Structure formats: structure tokens, C-alpha cells
Length: 312
Image: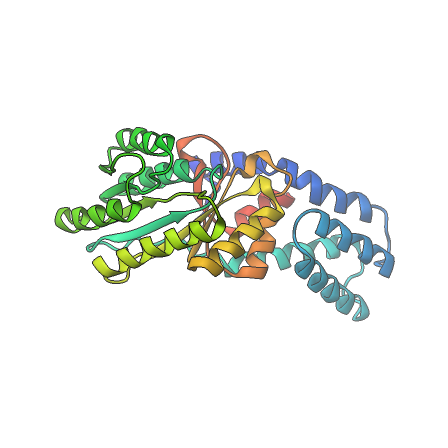
């Protein structure tokens, strides 16, 4: 894994550490305070630790599994002090997150389509703009598609990003059929030999069923016009919503099938532990994390950097 803690990476690592400060306070500080001065790992101490893990949004499944692992180690006399207990916690979190550490690869050549989904307010359109910036800086020809035709603001925001990152935008008027916009975009991308096509979609229709049916329709049109499309169905989640992020992930995954996740707003929340719960319970690749408003504050997810920034 490339070292992400030098030069500009070091700057990002510092921002990541600062961004996770609220989560660190809710998890690591509470663990430190609980085990401080404890000479032996008792059943009561492990029960208290389980409660802290659940309260820190790591989830009941993870908490139960790790407590069982700690009890097993304690029986084998392998958990003699507080440092060993903390190391087990860190190692388990890294192991879970590493399973979901799969960066998004954009193949060169034929259009690679990324359908971006998520409820309004998660930072979906901003994430699309930042992704486009990353791609264009890497020399990948990129197109933006305004398929959220239900909000004029979404189209306008995407237009601003398209100008900012110098990527063409395919759009129609507000209220247009989103599938018509996507149809136009696929054909434009094929004729222009565009490599990355990033499609913004609506985050709120009248009902959940209505939203999923609309997204399924978009997927069908894409698949009909371009083999394998969408090649990535990327869900944007807001870390500050905690347990709601898990519910959203389950809803979208059951509705249309998710192939990747972006977790935004980690810099403003004590609920950053939710990333562990999502990884443990859903095992969907975490493509990017967002820790601020700057253009380069959307970064490829690296589990060891994340855990180091959280604990150290």
C-alpha cells in the first residue's frame, strides 16, 4: 500500500486525524478511561467495553464478535493488560476494514459508467464534482450527467462543477425524464470516446418505492445502450447520520444493488465508527471517504491510515 503520510499525503493524514477527533473522543477516549489502571481484564470490564463499542456506532454484531475474541484470549492468558486489549480492538477493526478496501479502478478505453445514488443532503453532487476532479487530473476523460431532474439546484450545482473541473455536462430541463438524459449521455460518451461517465440521480421522490423504481429504470436503459452499464453503482452516505446510514445502505442495496460506498462528512461527526458497522454487516467496497470541503478532501479509503488516525 502506498505511503499516504508523506508530502501532500501527510497533510491529508493530519486533516484525517483532526477530522476524526470527535469519533476518537467518543470511542478511544472512552475506552482509555474505562481501562485506565485496570490490571486484569474482567468480565465486567468486557461488558462495559461492549457497551462503549455499540454507543460509538460500531454495531452490535462487531461488538459481540470482538468481545468473544477477547474472552477467548483472556482464557488463554493472552490478554494480560490494557494495551493488549486495545491492540486486539485495533487489529480487528483493521481486519474488517481491509476487506472493504477496494479502490475504484477506471479502465482506459470504452466508457466506464458510474451511477451515483443516495438521499438528498449526503453531499452526492459535491462528491461527483470531486471525483470528476480526481479523474481529469489523472488524465481520464470525464463526462457529468444531470439525471436528477427533480431539483433545479442539483442541475445548477452540477453545471458549476462541470465548469470548474472542465468536464462536459449532459443535461435537460428540470422535470425531464431522467432516462432520456442518461440515454443521451451514453450515446454522447460512445461517440466522444469518453472514459468516465458520472451520473447524478435523484435522492428523493414521493415514496421509497417510487425512487427505487426510477433508479431501476435508469439502470435498465444504461444496460440496454451500453454493455455492462452501470459498471459501478456508487452510494454516497453521510457519516453524521450514524445508524441512518446503515438503513440507507440496506435500502439501496436491496433495491438496486450497490457496488461501492462513499462516506462523507467524517470531519463533523462523532459517529465515524459507523464505517466499521457498514463494512462488517454489508461487506461492500468503500471507495472514498470525505473529510472536508476542499477539492482534495475526497480520498481513496485506506483502512490502516483510518485506524491509525483514529487511535494514535
